[in-house]
Image (tube, rainbow, N blue to C red; front, side, top):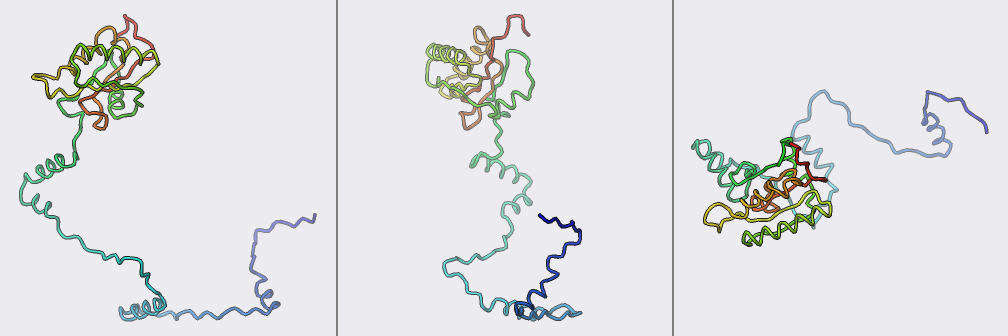
Length: 228
């Protein structure tokens, strides 16, 4: 096979004119607009645009989109006139949409651990970074029934090697005082026999029950008695 020396001067269209003449092919003439030293007037620009769009047929099936310039916001006007209007607008958004509500900043939010852990772990657990592998619903039970269900659930979760679980206990709104199940769950998680298995716990996200439920992160192996 014959080899050709490589060339850095690559001109693929150098022989195009000869090829066109050989095959008697004539290209259509293109007339470019003459350069002008002055800018086009608005009337000339419109005439040029109309000429370019002369053959364009609008689509009958499409709806026309009319752009509108937004007017001044009434909410902004109220904020400018009243220094308390901004707080009222934020409160309105909170009530209507939940915008601006941070669960971790409420008095009902709880978190804890049986030993010191980095604060980042609380943030990740509450933020849903751990896949929930099991849950139990204690809502509506009395304390004795709830504790029995909780103990059986924790035993099964540890036996099956689960790491992150969800305990639903309710917010205790029907309780005459402090939330009964929620307060007892805190005691069950931080006392024997389960405190050796609990790494951390936090209130759940709103989609998982909010402050009416608790995420629990379990250890792979129980913490030793002398471990601090």
